[in-house]
Image 1 (cartoon, one colour):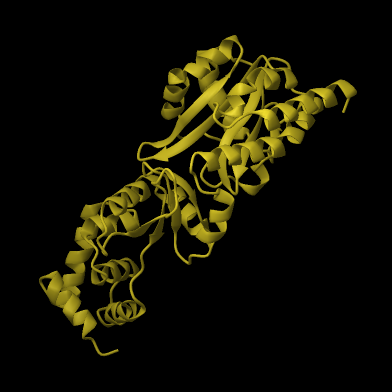
Image 2: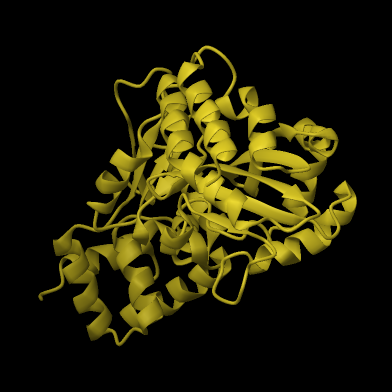
Length: 345
């Protein structure tokens, strides 16, 4: 690294340490310095949130003439929402380990690099912002596996090893600062909660004050990737109701200022009830899917909740329930559940 670059980096790091926490994010306060450090035509940062509508841009800002349009946000947010299948090129809820706090460029992306989908995204969105042919450099600043901010820049000329090295050197400092900003806002540590979420043997999620999904464990990630919409609806339903039949048990985190964060853990049937349901399924020769539906019925879940859990239409659940009634020779749920629970195992 050249002496002049070392001085530039040192100045940015010193500025990070000198910023007060009662001001806007450091990413905004240092926009001109980061723009200069990366020799970009535009410096950009943004964060995302996960709602019933999908992955949405939460905060976006930057520096340069073009970046001002990004800072206004509306155009970029609208463009991103139309391209859910192409954007983003990483899992923002549980960023892949090889992408966490590492630096990549768009033009250097190869078959093994993670920016292949970003190329497709930029093919669609670039003309709207005058970015045709631009290269991109970026780092995903994470707290644990969860994304805090995308930070980077864009320019016509390809980014060199110089910019990659400078941004990589800055990432640990940005990560530390952004974690501190989250803590001041009352948000829990995602690094600490990652271990707590992983300790559950079921799908588990951290929910934000407005019900947005902030983090999850590996089992939660599987649910997220297979049926995002159904999962978000199940979480929203569980957050509104303390009913034991809700698909998730939602527990508020205490000691939070401002309050509003909570843990959502997928419920499971008591072992004895599950054993009874398995025995009944074998006796009545139910299919694997009908057996799953029976277990959830015995656990007291409604057709809607079962549909959300199994990621299928409510009408499909009704068909399975009718088939189960026929095999069990009953005509209502109460009798069915009573027969299951009194079955000799």
